[in-house]
Every structure is written in C-alpha cells, then in structure tokens.
Image 1 (cartoon, rainbow, N blue to C red):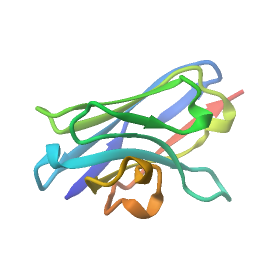
Image 2 (cartoon, rainbow, N blue to C red):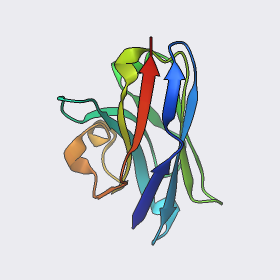
Image 3 (cartoon, helix red, strand yellow):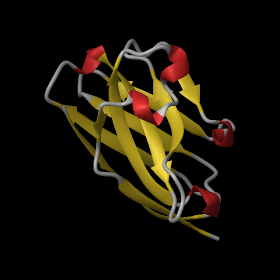
Length: 125
C-alpha cells in the first residue's frame, strides 16, 4: 500500500485548503483512512478518519466542524477539506491507512499501518 499526500500550501488565517491523498497498491475499499498532523516540536496528532465503507467519520476536538474528510473510492483518493484555518493549524499533514479497526481505535496513531510522506500546511496570521 502506498499513499501520496498533496495540495498543502500557504494560506492566510480564515482561508481554506483541500488536501488530497492518492492510494495505490491494494483494494482501497478495504481500508479505514485517516489524517494526522504534526506541528514543529510537537507529537503527531489525530485530525480525522473515515471508515472503509465511508459511512462513519471521526474528528478530533480541535476540528470543531471546520474539517471534512471524504473519499472517492472509484479514484482511490482521500480528501481533507479544511476551512476557517488558523495559525495553530500549521503542520505537516499525513494521510494513513489501516485494516478495519474498532471505531474507538481510529484516532490512535498506532492503529495505522501505512503512511504517506506528508504535505506542509502553513497558515499565516
């Protein structure tokens, strides 16, 4: 399984970005997918996740309705729409995949088997 995250960039506070993650190497529909982020000097943290079926999503508290995770199974793509960004959202964002874990485990870093290389998101004030 290979993951390739892209579409990060520089945006002003209050702006939006949509991250993309291309998936290849196995059957996309069999994996739960997630987005994590890591700010400078901080540990990697959970942002959002989606069940393999696409019917269930989970978000970190800091998202507060600003982020939306989605997937296009036909294109083997995962997305993270981020709105109303603020400087605290500055981080490297990673997409990740795991073979169907419990819902409670979707936010756990250790649940994920495959990781993309990360894409930088910088939010200026």
